[in-house]
Length: 247
Image 1: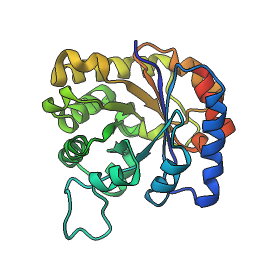
Image 2 (image 1 turned 120 degrees about the vertical axis):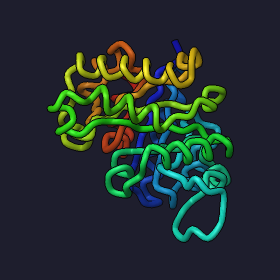
Image 3 (image 1 turned 45 degrees about the vertical axis):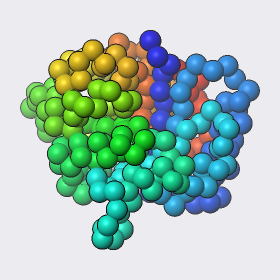
């Protein structure tokens, strides 16, 4: 198995002064044995500065979204090539806050993922069900459909990850049971294999949704879980390190 992949999503948080937390994280990891892949995805305003601050460290830097277009009259958008130019190696796509708040569709997310890979970025494509869908017994159907719509067959040849984030668990302190996490991760793996074939073995499936040091070990040892996409707990080095050490 590949090393667990732990990625932090800072969302719309962080100013220049907060780069000290990223540097503290990198400094601590430099004194510990390798074995976990670690990334931080700050807001776009910090990507260049974080990439410079962490240059040569074990911590990769990513963006939180990108346009499907390479350039043009798209005020306020950031292309995949611009993220690469700023020092990013990864990009989160299709997060529920983008799907819900910005009405992004599976087709748009797939187009962004293809653009990201063409520019040399590794996408982390997010999927997840709402509480209503979970209660209606539709969770597997929903996330499987999101995989089919958001992942293109041609992505099989390049690196990408999937992150399962049940919408009802993001930032709420709630988490699914370990059995529920395992069931969805195995369903995602099956849906992903139908799209990208045997290359699915190299595509980690991360869990996200109120991951914290106190529950990380149990989540990360659950079958089918290849890592974690961490929100609020990634903002402070001490909290994020607690999750990384649990892997």
